[in-house]
Amino acid sequence: MSSRPLPDAWALFRHRPFALYFWGRALSELSYQIAAVAVGWQVYALTKSAFALGLVGLAQFAPTAALVFIAGHAADRFDRKRIVQICQIVAGLTSAFLAFGSFAGWLTVPDIFAAIAVFGAATAFDSPASAALLPSVGPQGMLQRATATSTAALQVATIGGPALGGFIYVAGDGAPYAAMAAFWLFAAFLTGAIALPRPGTSREPPTLRDLFGGVSFVRRNPRLLGAISLDLFAVLLGGATALLPIYARDILYTGPWGLGVLRGAPALGALLMAVMLSRYTLDRRAGLRMFQAVIVFGMATVVFALSRSIWLSVIALAVLGAADTISMVIRTALVQLATPDEMRGRVGAVNFLFVNTSYQLGEFESGITAALFGAVPAAVLGGLGTIAVALLWMRLFPALQKVERLE
Image (cartoon, rainbow, N blue to C red; front, side, top):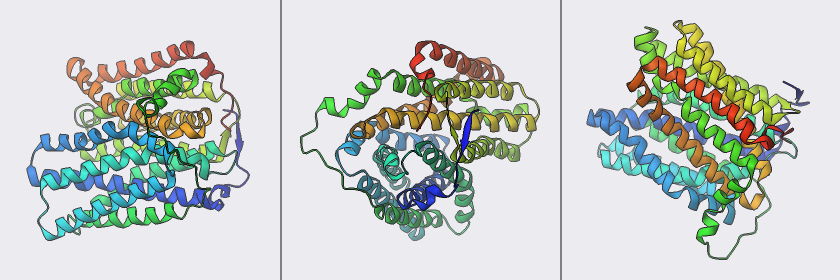
């Protein structure tokens, strides 16, 4: 990999807008990860129903999918910083409602599901706005590093958030929600402190063409279409992590502790790679590197599928997470660079919907394939399918393969 080291590793954090953005995003993601533990545990404690647990994901995904194109248009029409800040305030107040209801003892399952739907709606507006905001808060010419550094923050939250949520839960079922409220409201304070030129806003009423302008823009741009669709199909086919409980219990014979180690391995690999990419810039052949990363992702999936050693499985999953991070950082930077600022919200909404859908459907696809053919054949087929998609996309989108730099 041809790379260029960052002369000063702390240059990003001395840039005040990025530092405020970074810590605000980190606290928001930490809150979401705590919520995943607290909500799941409390819903199951109240219902003793696996079906109710399944509805938790649906309750959050449905408003996200329904609102994402409206949210993308809003990110291009209004002040993105204010949209992110309002979403953080709404999420923080919703968490405070859950905390108060839990401590007082009157919180019901319908109350929790209503709060989850509010979280989903906030996510729909927050994600495209925050993604479109990133190029504005980072120093000029440091988009890849800014993307990689913010990705590292998300990975730290992904690793530490569930553990922190479980630890805080010991103090009572309302304690995690109280922590989430504090984190989100402080994140809103940090976001509000970001100083940027006030954007101009359109006063024309939105049309359907405006709402779905991101879809049309992506379809007309081969680089964007290739990058976003590559991630969609690669994740859709390579969702072997959904089968980790089967591998831990029936194939690797490790028990719950092994499942925890396996689940943490991709995030650890992703974090280490994000830190590396925040210090080293890809100088050339960035498009080709993305294809190579997807191929490595598929190969690591196959190794994991065939492994009978937990340590080999952990290494394979860590490589899988690292390769996925390379692909994600390059794709995110490409999307931002190829999109004019007035379209970044709507294009970010398309990217967010594709990524979210690919993870959801990827787990579903892996589960169905495993039910039909068994866990090992399903994981092997998924890894080989990912490699095949990457090779096919190299032929279908040659312009994407020829992208050189990300700055």
